[in-house]
Amino acid sequence: MSPRRSLVLVAALLAAASAWFLREPLRRAVHPLTLAMGARATIDERVAEYGPGAHARLAPDLERVALTWPPQSLVLVGLKRERELRVFANDGSGARLLRTYPVLAASGASGPKLREGDRQVPEGEYGIEALNPNSRFHLALRVAYPNAADLEQAHIDGRTELGSDIMIHGGSASIGCLALGDEAIEELFVLAAATGIERVRVLLCPHDLRVAAPPAEVVAAQPWMAARYAELASRLRELPDR
Image 1 (cartoon, one colour):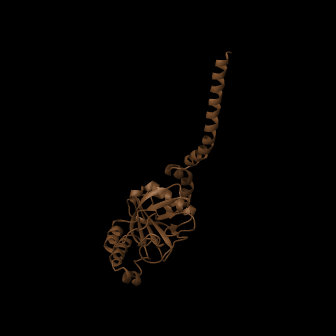
Image 2: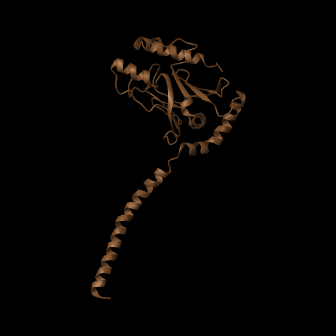
Image 3: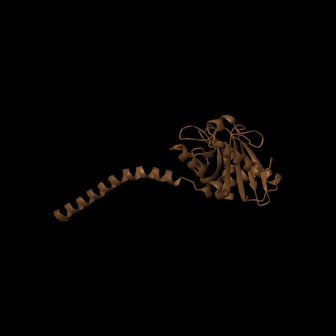
C-alpha cells in the first residue's frame, strides 16, 4: 500500500473512531430518556391494566342497582364536611347511587377557591376535562376549574391567578384536591373512561345542601355564593338519596 493510501486509511479510521466516541455518550444519555418517555401509559393501556380488577370490585354494586354497563352519564358529588365522594350513574333509566368513597385527604374549609395557593377545594358545578393515566398520585381525573362562573366572578372582584390543576386522584395526601386511594381511583378512572369524560359532571359542595343550610360565614364573606349554593342544592335534589 502506498504511503498516501495508508495515510488516507488512518485518517478514515480516526474519523470513524471519533464519531463513535462522540455518539456513544449521547446514545447513553438519550436511551434512559427514551425509555422513560416510552414507559408513559395511555388511557387505554391503564384501562386494560386496571379494568378487570375495577370491574370485579364494582360488580356487586352494579348488580345491586341494576346498572347496564357502560353508564350513559356520571355525577360525582364531593362533600367537604362529610369527606365523601358519591358516584351517581345513569344508564338511561335514571340516576342511581353506585358508590360512596371516603375522601382520604383534602385541604381547606367550606367556601370557594378564590386564588392560587389558598389550598381550597373549589365549590360549584364542573366538568372533567382530562384523565391522567400517568399521575404521580397513581391515576387522576382533572376537574375543569375554573369554570365560566369562576372567571366571571373573578373579573367582577378584580381577582387574578385563580389557580388550576384541581384533581380527583389516588394516594392519601392532597392539597386543594380530593385523594381517594389507589383502588378507588382505579374504579373511578375506568368508570369515567367507559362513560366518556364529556358526560361526567362534578358537584363540589361544602356539605349535603339538601339536609343543611349553606354555611352562613361563607355567604357573609362572599355574598355571591348564595346563588351558587342554591344552584348546587337544586342539582343535588335531582339525585336520589340512595
